[in-house]
Image (cartoon, rainbow, N blue to C red; front, side, top):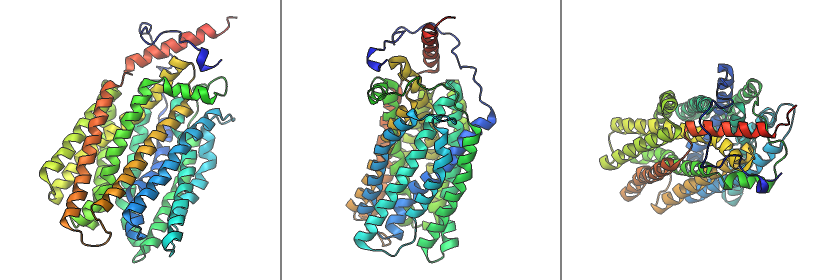
Length: 473
């Protein structure tokens, strides 16, 4: 049966009366929540290292022009984004004795570690050869990353159908992710100096190798501590059916839009911050602590926002966090280049708002899987998360490329004293872009329709539909 001839048992505007939905009492054990969440710790050793330091490594260590470095970074991310729906579709059709998604964690962790280390392998190449090496190693890393990350993301929707438990899972993974961000932000440059001394290339390689090796046992722990409880589609879905799960899923499309805006805001902020610290505030030594302050605030704030989410909704948390972030960026713009203490207070406030954005973003998407099944008859969580990740990474690629391009536009040249116009341009990038993006995210979050109550009704409708299709004995 294809998506074309599947009608909903209940129309979207005529949901059944509220009833205890199947799976709403599916409490997950602490070890399973923590085991799943730790997987994001491992992923964020990679993600945060590349997000926070790879562009800086390209420009200030390898000596690449900022525009070139930005578009190499962005081009590799675009390739990654194109791979995401394909990886999600393939994972959705995978059938093994370990499930659909967990085996990728088992067999993909070592290739991912090796590809990450290759990006930072010390080299004295120059010119076109260096550019080719940087681009190829980055694309290989992005490919192996998506082969693991896509199944991991989709795994979240198979652990439970309970919307509140999914919110709890999102909180666990965000706490673990922010812990990794804290480690990477605070320790990377210090360890680069310890292991490399005057040789930054060697220092970066050793540190990134440590992160890569540390990730492997964590991925294995996630594999052994999780179990796919939600049954897959009864047949391998076609490409047409996979596309239908996306095209007819308004909450998912809104969640993607919210994510694009959040990623744009976060990328402009995190990519510009090291340059502001080094060239605007002349405190290169505080790059790590500044990034660490943001990570600490995310780590602290996740439990608070999870508590708020359980008592309100994912939509409310997304809007509240966005508004708080807008206030933080507006304060930066109003004050201008502040003192170090004021600057750290404001970026701490921004970090607190980032926690809400990340938590709501990852908590919203699993619920859209049931909405898509309700509308089309196809779960397709692999496809849902593949397209979601595609949107996420396209936004990141364009934002990183934009940052690199704008650095070139304001006449930035690495490792030199910058003109005041250049510093002013970098400062404007830090707060203006993020504030605009967050305004968009708040507007889209306002339109997001899946409340906890509506999700429960959808689960009940799906339960009734499956019961009607089950032959009686």
